[in-house]
Every structure is written in structure tokens, then in C-alpha cells.
Length: 368
Image 1 (spheres, one colour):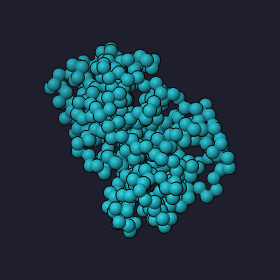
Image 2 (tube, one colour):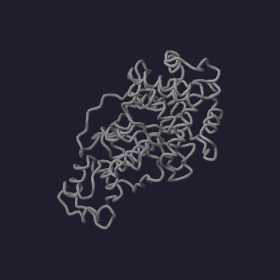
Image 3 (cartoon, helix red, strand yellow):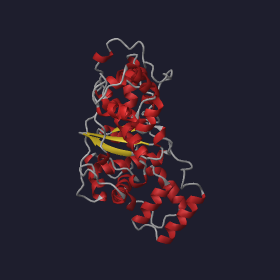
Image 4 (spheres, helix red, strand yellow):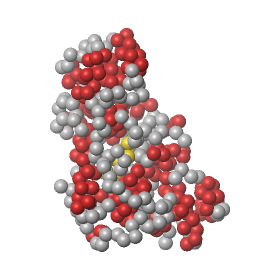
């Protein structure tokens, strides 16, 4: 049996229209459309052509039905400027991350979700509530990735095709999920994490709450969460010099531009001081990068999972085989979050593990 919803998911993941895919595999557009709605079933040869074109093993298309991530559940940063193709690739990538997460949850005991919904509060108030609820006080957050994971947020990487999307987040039933764009500085990834936490806290109970206002609120939440007002007021930062800002950004592990904006927002810098600092920071390259910045945060949860996997001789290929994915596909969702063991690349359409670990489906490992 073939699962029609998986054809659509795989096609979206590869950024293809029905017409493009139909042309590639040599069938009529109407035929492919009928496969995707379940009115017709492709032949075995058609299925092999589908698998090869979409770079998914044939087994992916015969697994259980799969519910897509609704567009209204995600607050994209510039949805009005985003093409439908880019949006579909990102949503499909998010759905595949959920499959990988379900594989982990089926074998390990992971932290349960503890992300409140505070949509009736201001972003600044909500950030303070979350900090106090999680016992963070007003101190700098050492490792934001670990903090979010310890409260049940699942964090994955977006594939390289999604570089223009930036990060995004959504709740899948009770599970909060954040997907991060790769290739950013450590400080910008932290701000992205805090920004997406803002969406989870402020907006996920209001499906469809998207656009500039939602993004501005998430930015205010992130600034307040990473750089609390009370803590900054206790620092010698009024009319701060550029050298003081560059020193202080290391304390809070934020971008120099983000700290400068926050100080202006709190009234610590005049508009003139703010503009002068921004001009000089831009001249020094801080607008597009973070010279002298920190090291990217790794995932503690994924690190422990892979440590346990190595002890049981389980690898990326086993995950891929169980889920009907390629090892390459699984790896893309884990980049920059965990050090992965070297894997031999699997050619699209071939089995990801011709000799799966015996009894793997019955193993239920526990995350210490």
C-alpha cells in the first residue's frame, strides 16, 4: 500500500510542484495529482521513479499516514515575502524533524514540556514570568539551548535549502519545537532561540497570529529574556561607551548590535549615542557578523542520546532505516547541534541500512 500524504510531504520537501515532479518521472500531471489525493495508486515502477526523483527510499511512501504542519501554526518572519515553495520546504522539514523526534521519544525518556502560554501579557512581562518560573532570576543565561531543552523544547536544524527562512517554531500537540537556520553566529542563534521561545509563549495559542506585530513582540520578548531590565540597571551602562558595550556583550552572550538596541530601548543611550555606536559597529563588521564572538551552543539532549546510541552500536543509519529516510536527510536536521559520527552516505532510493541492528524496534533506552 502507498500512503498518499507522504508523496505530498516528500514533494514539498524537495520544493517541486506537481507539474515539475510529473514531468520528471514521466507521468501526466493529473495522474500524479490522483496519487496525492489517494484516488489512484502508482505501479511498482512508478514508485521507484518517485523515490529516485524525490530522494526518499521507497519504504518512506508505505509507512503510516502523516499529518502536515498547518501554515497557520507557524509564525514565519516574512510570510508575505516568502514564496509558496520556500514555505512548503520549511514546513515539510519541520514535519520530518517531528518524525526524528518521535523516534527519539520512543526510545528515550526526554524532558517533558514546560513552556507556558502567556499571550495576554506584554512581551516584557512574559519574559520575566518565564525567567522566574524556570528559576533563572536575572542572571545571564549560560547555555540557552540547554535551558530550553530542559523544559521540553525540541530543537532541530533547518536544512540548507531553508537558509532564507530564518528560524521558526510551533507546538505539535503538547510538544514545542524550534528549527534553527545553520551558519549563523553563536550570538544570533541564541537570539533566534529566544525569539522563537517568544512565539511559543505569546502566540501559539492564537493560530494564525503572524506578521510584523507578532515579530516585533517576539523580538521584545527575546531582548527582555536575554537582557533583563533589572539586571542591566545594576550595571554601569548609562551612556555606555562602545568599549563597554563590546565587553558587556560577552557577559550576556548577545550580539553587540542587540545589546546596543536594548540599551537605547531602556533609555540608557540617547538617540545620538545609539546612532553613533551603530555606525561604528557597522564599520567594524558587527552588522553582518560578530567579530570575537562566542562558540555555538551544542544540544545536551542530542549529545546524551548519541552517546547512548554509540554504546548500543546504533547510528544515523538505524534512525534513517526505521523512518524510511536517507542518512543524509536525518543528518541535515542535526547539523550544528551535535557532533555526529562519520557515516557512509546512502544513495537516494537505496536502503539506508541493509543490515539493521537486531531487535532495534524493541529497544527502549532511557536518557540519563
